[in-house]
Length: 213
Image 1 (cartoon, rainbow, N blue to C red):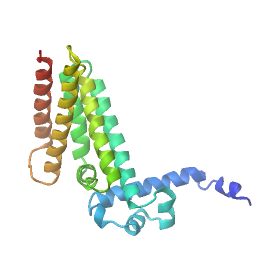
Image 2 (tube, helix red, strand yellow):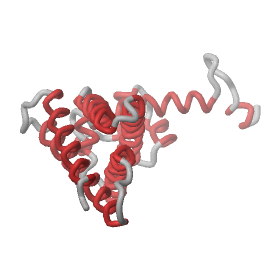
Image 3 (cartoon, rainbow, N blue to C red):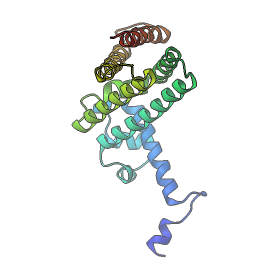
Image 4 (cartoon, rainbow, N blue to C red):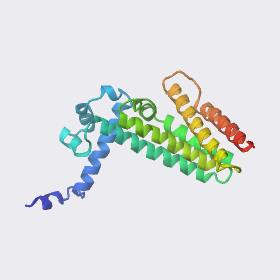
């Protein structure tokens, strides 16, 4: 039997690509479970494979190394969180206050609803590698762009748009650090209180931008 024929074989109704995708999903889940509890530094490739019920051969089929798995878990989580946030904001359009509230509600509830997710996204990726630091900064800018798009460009000169960009980045960074503090147990606020505080800050900042001459 040729290699092509072997690769194309179906087992349990699934072809080779589908089986590989399933194994990758199991490794992603194992990464979330271990990196989000024991921590990235404490979880080895061997432990991840054991947790996923797979051999190391299958780990390297999908990931170069442990850092590559962390990046895969992080990117999958960010994709999901971004989609939830954008959908919530779109559903509340066109009222800007309502959109900001809906976006913050979706973002904060999604992230804080799973302790593993919060720890991985907010803590474990920080400083994990130069590559992940670059990606983490990109994500902050992506969420800042989402906020700026909701608020919309203010009337006036180009400087006003620049002010919106700066403000959006400041707000996103503030929410990020507040949630880091909360995840580490330094704040005992409820999720509702976190959303209320962040919404108040966002509305105040956005109104201040609109009032700039």
